[in-house]
Length: 151
Image 1 (tube, rainbow, N blue to C red):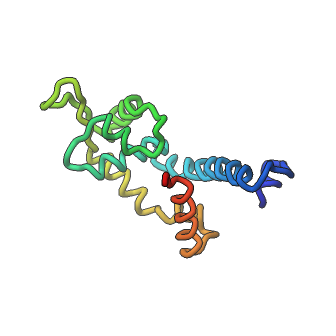
Image 2 (tube, rainbow, N blue to C red; image 1 turned 60 degrees about the horizontal axis):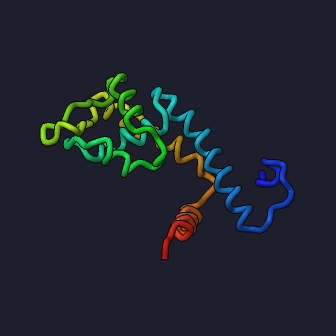
């Protein structure tokens, strides 16, 4: 379907306005489909993002500040999400030995197992974009990077 049909809007101010609306709409469309994928392991996309960050730093623990800097969704409440991961047994949290004001976060074995199971099902998440060829995906990445370029 076209954006116009999906959101029942026939006119846009200009093509740039349409791109803005299309990006927002497509982001939400993708998140809705990803949610079903993460529901398989009873985690949210933000929890997945933090687990992925923790796995990348393993075996070295990192602080909530370092996690926040690496997160895709900068508006997330990192501390609250980490607390939920700890309650689920997917992450560990302890006071930093180097600085008592900081908290060190690390992934648990169970957290790594959850990510491994999701990694094995990556075809389901990749299928969200299955209408794009490899070349289309490369070109779209170039365009998205161009939008965010600051020069």
